[in-house]
View 1 (tube, rainbow, N blue to C red):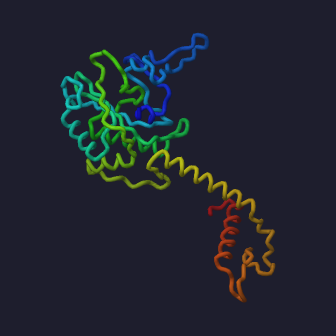
View 2 (view 1 turned 120 degrees about the horizontal axis):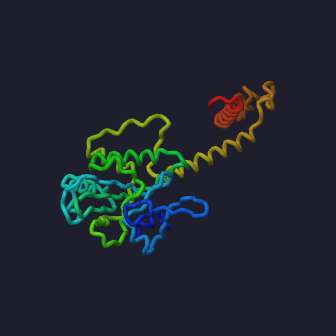
View 3 (view 1 turned 180 degrees about the vertical axis):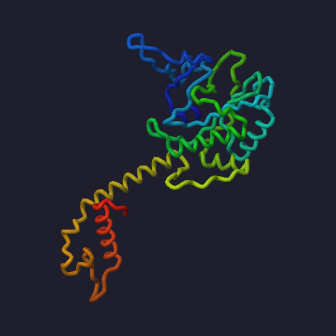
Length: 283
């Protein structure tokens, strides 16, 4: 199933009901408490109504708790609050509706799940893309009347199989994976909100994959510069008084009084950059 493949997990911490203490297990010998994990595809996971879908360091889904009741029974999409239904319709027409919708069968409240390009952050840290996820979640909450206090720890589990009459009724809308930047842009176009200017040093990337590729490129460039620095001669090694040397750079001549400008300029730039680097100055 696309949903499980996109989340990329073999097991989930989960709970059959709202007593989340059951989602933890204690080692009787050490007293250490660990999450109770349920393997994908097992009957035990299917019986769970709640699961942990997101993680501060890796998230492939945006989950919203739509806390606006219609006070209608049924658990169908048509039982949503009329304003929520209208907004979700507009998002769906634009191509940015949620992939999954779970409806409370008693009052029409809901949870919505968007499949997003995965966002990453280092251990105990945030990243531009995790901050963008926070922005997207906040602005969707404001648009749909979502619960701003929703912890995003345990979410409703859309693949549960339960005879509980209060269990959410889940509806798969599509399997589209959206970019957070595009989703935020669409929400802002619906609310006539201007995109704030990006601050200096706050480069954002369209997706987690783009961020990884950018990091790899920077690493490769840094290695190239290190290798180049090891090959460049010290300034003292090039005698300023030597024939054909100007400002510590050996000029390449292609004729009487005519220097090879491209080659000479390149050598001059390298030597200058090397001197600045050795002095600890900015390039």
